[in-house]
Image (cartoon, rainbow, N blue to C red):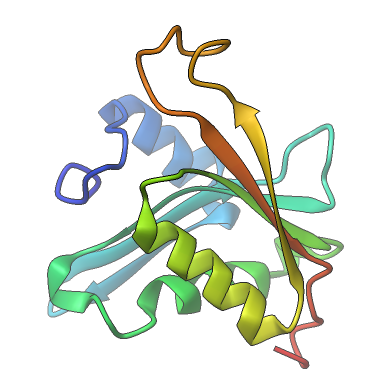
Length: 147
């Protein structure tokens, strides 16, 4: 799924298995007709457990345009394991228009702010090998009944 959704970074099968087991409460898969059409992985950073960090979002071309990514994120946030989460965070490169549209759309839907700050910089962190990863921080999040 990840490999079919550039520009996502492919992880090892081992990493994906750890996400699906050790982080099962913060990952979700969408299926249709026996096949996987969506995937969101995330976690609550130990140093900032009030945040839910979205690591990767992948939606197959067959399921795009149906708000699937947003619905998966909302389903993750509604889980008991996310009780106490007040902000959604992620990192996105400037050129990833689909991700910016997703997260800006969620902020609009929830009626909250989205803040953009550099998290991992092109030169300082990646020695020019990849673009700056901008942190998007959305919140404070509405309660599930408000969203």
